[in-house]
Length: 112
Length: 114
Image (cartoon, rainbow over all chains, first blue to last red; front, side, top):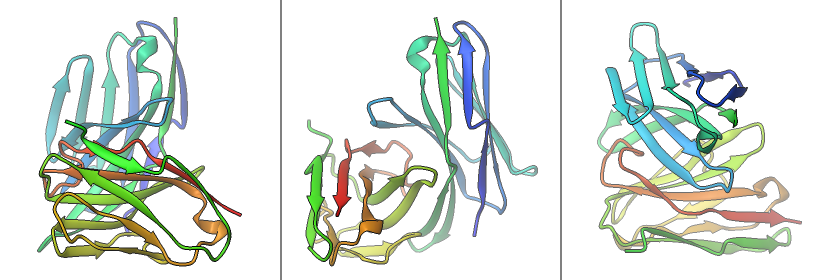
């Protein structure tokens, strides 16, 4: 069973700061997902990574397959970035079957 | 375009009662899935489906049944509710086999079992 660890659990930042959230997993995967859960509970898919780096606006996600580690970076953080960020390790085993293991989330608060 | 519709938003059940959480999508997505979210545990996959007529178990399937008779609908049935099933439930759909890639989530159902 894959173990997924996120750090830190909680993070408070001043507006404009550069944010890094880390995610480590224990066994090989097909893809690594980053999700954002808004304070009201809604969940949005941010990135899916199988290698390298992806960028969307001020959000950057990287993955190192050899080290089994992924990071989510937020540049020029803003109070509207305040949310819980969740990583999920996706192991696809073929024929439509897969395992999906989630981290417990990182609660980010960005203060004006 | 409604996306993913989950009903009800809130529900209180007595121990032993049964109920169905509804999930419907209008995006013609093949992949649909159910999750529960508990404090301190994070999200966990209950059941998923890769197309009409095909379902599979996730990490925590016990006490739940699913079926996928149409592409649009993926209901989750609680057979005999237990207090341990108190949780927030999310349904999601995606066009990709990689679960969340391009996924749309429902707004959640907060279930309390007393």
